[in-house]
Structure formats: C-alpha cells, structure tokens
Image (cartoon, rainbow, N blue to C red):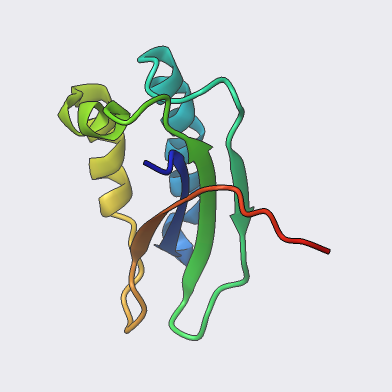
Length: 108
C-alpha cells in the first residue's frame, strides 16, 4: 500500500482562513493518535480559480495500512473532516481528492 497521500481541496475563498485553521489541527490530531508518521506534512495553495475556489494541497504519510480506516472511525478526526466539508467551493471541478503515491526512481 502507498502510504504517502496527496490530498487536494477546493475551498471557498470566504472560508479560506477557517479552512487553514482546521488544516492546522488536522495533522497534529492524526499524529497524537499515531495514525501518521513523524514527517511533518507539506501544504500548498494556489490562486483562486474562475468560480472562486482556492486550491489547497496537503501531503502527509499514514503510519501504516490500517491508519486511514482508523481515522475514519475516530470522532476527533471526524469533527475536523466535517468542518472541512462545510467549506468546499462549488463549480465543476472536484472539491477534494486523495491520491496515494510512492517514490519513483527516474534514471537521469
């Protein structure tokens, strides 16, 4: 299983500050529950798109293959995810996606 996760979110511009606050709690809660590795997450944001959605990217590593399932069962994580769900931008683009990846060796 690929344990590195690239999560992308499209957040309403008027909710961007509140979303950042929730995002600042996300990894610490997952870490306290030992569901992610010690490696700090990375965050990126882009400029608002035509319909006002702000793209936000979060990259982190699950601690093991069962961690994601355990996160879905824990109330503290669910509270954060429910809060995030109130901040999605509308429009045609997906509001969130999660891609599990692994390092790729490229000969140069």
